Length: 332
Image (tube, rainbow, N blue to C red; front, side, top):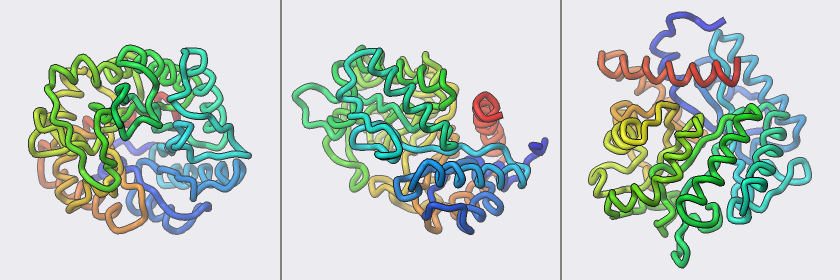
């Protein structure tokens, strides 16, 4: 049974989604849940051997959270199809990815099959679909991962994937707000800059994300991209202007907002600085995908800041309401 008045550690841990090594429920996973009170886990190909093994891993993790009196865990994976698919053949269906999806029926087929396979192994969130636009004739970093066509077509196909995933019990996460399709650099290795007029973004890159919000997508993931005309100082994943103003107020999205992986080199800096910006920006979930000290540092820094700042504590309670509402809808 969920405790009525969670302490600072639980409030902090529930705002972190973490990765880990191994294919079994091990001491590292136990530490994440029991000591850090983590709210979610993310799985990669290295965590997945077979459907049976994955189901046992997820079941053990959820049982541990229950035994600790914690809410159910988000258990997430990137299963876009194509070049980004953590669940692979022969156990799982291989789809060619978003560029091959040309119709709503094809979008539905991908999402329905994927939802069934994820649900079957205990995964409850798909960090998909990509809602970035890869303009024709542009050497986009997202060319191999984006739906084909312009803003309206991407919006329609992406919205259908979202609706079908969620109608079949899997939370969807639209990414990478506010759009990285017109960048060439890989944020896994360096910080891309998109110096674009906000008016252009509004009629292009933002259109699919507005559609995702209207489809009541469960979560949105922020990009590790610097948009100087929106915020000259901070990339989207650490920006109060982009996350707090553009996404929350102007787009009107009131669901769960999460960062992209803080281990990516585009954003890699002092984790305490990242936490400060995340808390200020009304971002609900900090994503740290790899084993290491940053996971624990993030939880402890969130705990420290919300315990000493009344405004950050209030904003964390608001984040917890969004997180708990989503978990109640899909996991309880």
